[in-house]
Image (tube, rainbow, N blue to C red; front, side):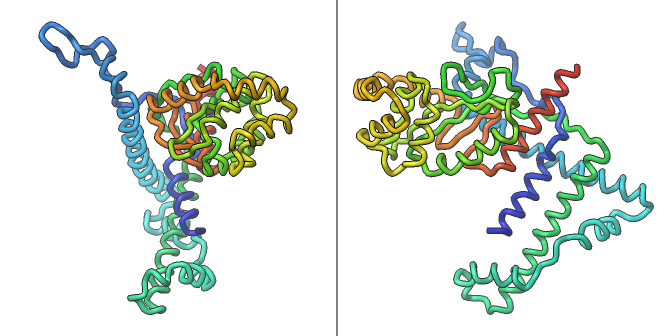
Length: 347
């Protein structure tokens, strides 16, 4: 839905202002690992034990805190930037907002209103057509103004050279020994937990390929298995990927399985192996033996430990991103991480 996408873009642009982030530290950090947080008689429970036991839950809370802080921070920055620009132009903030935001917001056309009306009219049968269209028009106008405000504030951020020093929470996710694309020296590593039978995992694949085209050797993508309980063929598909990896053709098998998600029975997997040029006898022996089950179970256990509950799930330099997000969302985080890497190298 176009209006939802516009609203999403406005919110994301406002919160993350791509390319303007610098390295820094959060205000709230966990206590030193050796700190005693409780005792049972003479036995001490340390902060390290607390962190280990609640790693995924604490990481989730810190992510929520970070996102809230970022939203508040960008509200403060927005107000200050508008005040400074208004003072420089010798106009009031209200006049500046009118000139640069309200007057320059995209107009709401009758076609926009009609299109939205057709989508929602059955849900609002208690309202007349005129009432509903007026409400839709007001909402679309508000969204367009919000988008223009986000765009304008981004211009002011760039003009003023804003740097945000709020470091996002991160979690260490193992990536060694798993199939990967891109150099180990890449400044950005994306660890993906995925399920070959999951439609959302398949849906995000074109986005990941676009990221590779866009960033080249600046990113490394690591694949880890997380077969969901409701997908009966996913575990064996994960094993098929591992068996193909033994012959150096994991990514060919990966692409083949995602392109044929309705055909992931064992017989289908063996057919695919032949189609991508694997030694079928070795592949079939590997798949039938079940010796690769331990690999996806380890991935699944690590995913659980890191707070993964569904697929696809991504950790971008340890920053959690859930679901089949659009290219823009991945790019915002990657651009921030590349900026951090550039600043770190300059020190």
